[in-house]
Image 1 (cartoon, rainbow, N blue to C red):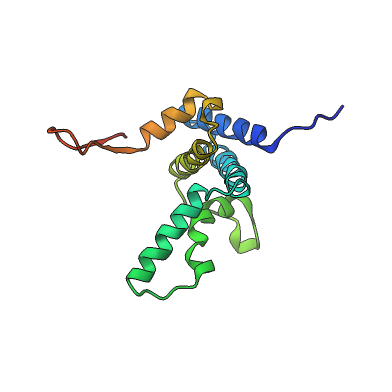
Image 2 (image 1 turned 90 degrees about the vertical axis):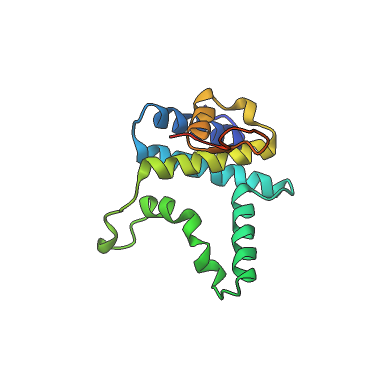
Length: 156
């Protein structure tokens, strides 16, 4: 018996699973793949709702920075880096493309963070497990500009 399921529900499951794997230091490529899929689905939902996704904002920031520095670039090529690691583990285009060289744990945390930002924009972060918050917290640099103490607290 089939069930109709909203794709955001699936994306939440993907992201929660990815973060759980990451927190327990397991299956980094699976965590990366699941988090990237969650980011892609949640990013599309942002766009459909008229809000730029986190990735859209990163691309616009890079576009503006390159423009201000008068650096010529091919937009498609310049922004392939956002999904380069996801595509590297997902596609095998030839025999020469049978290996990847990347830090899967680090990349998984990056995609988890990107997906989390999209879920924040959608107002759905309350559906995410504490594991997602833990990854975001552990992989974020916090800056307190109002404190008299050392302004940067870095999480490992």
